Image (tube, rainbow, N blue to C red):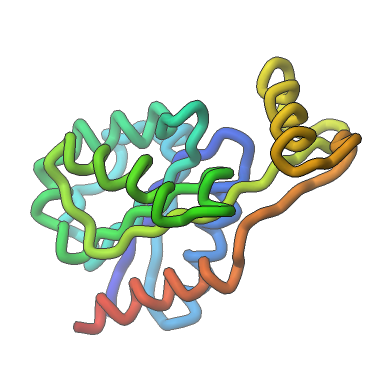
Length: 185
């Protein structure tokens, strides 16, 4: 039986929800998974990567940057990741992917992996979600920036109090299924 490791970094929860959906699809295909939010686990406690048949890494993008924990994990474990490139998948969650997935991949995945010297067999970028409801994790200056984007780019007069979800769940499930198919080869 195959075993897949899913690692992700999330700031406001959108990448976690994507990772959860990917994990569900993989499990539905009869594959065992382990999933970690890198913010909540010491990366030293993650077993050697060669114990897995496949690895998926996802990160949210904010101000053009991966989450710190994903960036750190990839840098620290790059030698192991290089050995796993044939069964490595990578994805980002960002607002830019809503309109142009290719541009998001070219901006946030390809050059960053190349800089570390890693290639991934499967990459994708998914739109994000902006939660402007009361009590959401989007607060302070980030909230003001998101509201400005929603007004200017989306033409929404009063975006407060709503969730704007630009994630394509079918595309996310397709990505997970493609990863499963790659494991079977």
